[in-house]
Image (cartoon, rainbow, N blue to C red; front, side, top):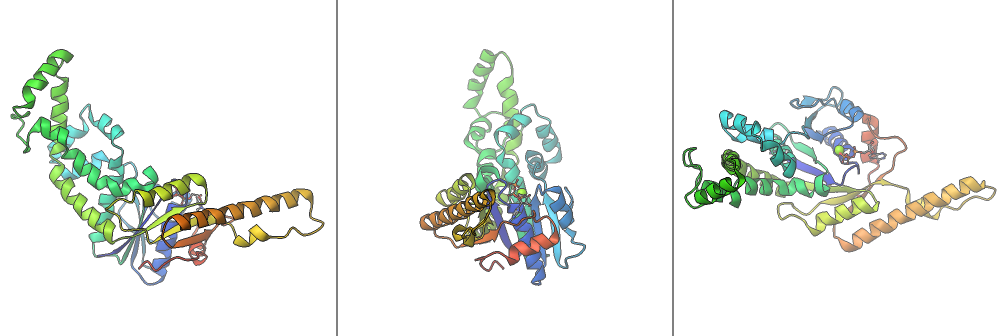
Length: 339
Ligand SMILES: Nc1ncnc2c1ncn2[C@@H]1O[C@H](COP(=O)(O)OP(=O)(O)OP(=O)(O)O)[C@@H](O)[C@H]1O
Ligand SMILES: [Mg+2]
């Protein structure tokens, strides 16, 4: 089984970039490595040679590196097709309530991504699988989605409507629910509830598959090395803190928090040379203050939570090419051993 490294964090902090550069590093250290990216920027995708919807592809230049793009939009449709009979899956995805379900339960995207990742971890092809995660709910959703998904498709509402066991289509409602539904239908003047119940029953038929997969995915989560990526800005930091505060039981404690886009600490004390133009002096002061603010933010975080902190410098150029990806990991300070 592969060593899984899960890279999580708020939106836009550099998760995909960090995941890609860790994978480049693992491959260069001799590991057969797969990086699973979510919606990478176009230039990064081409640096990794990955295309949407494809199977893992071998990197043309980096030996032992493979990449694949997880379909960020894959969700209920994937889940339905994976876990229901083909005819039931067709009925589900064409159901009038299907879209409403996908809108009200977006965690299905995280679930579909986690299911896909689990398949690759289980395959014996790779030593290391680096998993980039969808940014929803500060990354927490990725970890809670399997349990929530299993709960939803096997949930109490469905049990009420469909009975304890999955019934045949003829025995659509259990005896207790049927009169209630008839009464509601009379009030609503349509067979609305009956149609909803049909939909829920079809959804319920995915339960066995989803429940089994959820357990398998959670076992992978517990064994994985989880890295929380953040910047020193308040919003992503709050999400990183949430990850610790609401640490889902299913995830192992993060092995490190990565402060990405870190300014050099020396800037905080930089002396402004004499005869510097007022404009430049002002600029240096502002960058110095920002560097100090970042340091304070890191210290504040370290005081609240126990996890090793790692910093990655703010590069002048976005690291979307291989050289940039290599250099951000070479310049990372405090990164623990991950594989
Ligand atoms: N250390 C860095 N220095 C400079 N630019 C960086 C650094 N890390 C990431 N970036 C740039 O920041 C932008 C966001 O990075 P990235 O796409 O990896 O974030 P993300 O967390 O995956 O975003 P999303 O949540 O939208 O998926 C990209 O343009 C990336 O090239
Ligand atoms: Mg990303």
